[in-house]
Length: 265
Length: 103
Image (cartoon, rainbow over all chains, first blue to last red; front, top):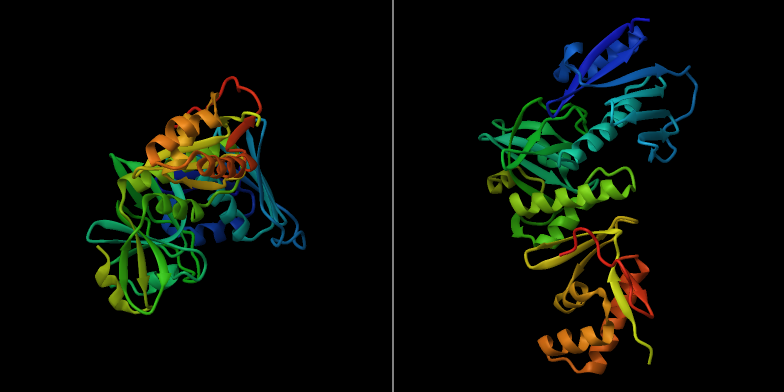
């Protein structure tokens, strides 16, 4: 049976082909991921989405991600999904809301990225003067604040989940549709990663150097990391070390004022 | 007093960065940064040399610490890492020691 909707959602230059038989869900997804859509033929990874009847389980249960016989199984109260990294294809059973698929896309991209030495970070990011800057921190650290305070010549990549992967001997940051409090997707553009700032709200603006071991630890703390799998932990650890070795990681103490952007660069 | 032998677990990832050794458990993602003394013990943890020999030959020599005090600190450090599965500890030599990417 031909799905009603079949299109690619491309994040970080990696399209995921999404198929759904629901016309209304297909349209709402195309609206949500508008800046990241690609023609169906361009997707090398694929997700088939089957919708559950309304009134099903809710999203408040813990997320579980496990590798079983070569396939990743993802389960939360509102969805169950599996994804085979060998074929690049998977299935999702979920209610008709975009949040479930958004979560599955984050997990799949984090797994695909880990294989290529990249990482999804709890961080906002923006491009200015051809360079990308990442602002990492836990909830309340100021990710969305830094995005809101960005000068008009900065292009926002995301206010919530940053996509970073190795490229040309360094790292490159890509825009994502994964939004936080700003509730707006980032721009689908990319730039070489110039610096990572660890956010701390303070009573003044100041940039501090960070000890490499502390920088690695901070990046690991801000990495989207869903499964306690030994091979995955090794890859994520190696990526955090490579990032710290190649990209300046600094602590940014700041007040929520636009002047803070004068320190970035 | 019985001898203790230590070996690096295979369930870890480790790197040297900025002169510091970082070790992460792949079992529970616990993260450790080793100080200079701990690094020397870590690097010598081959499963064949007893902890007392390691402390006598490397720690006491390099850091001018008295043996009794150094052994007390070393045992505490070894026990802590062993609890997190980072180091294997045994009353006798340990075969097939070491992780793939230990420094």
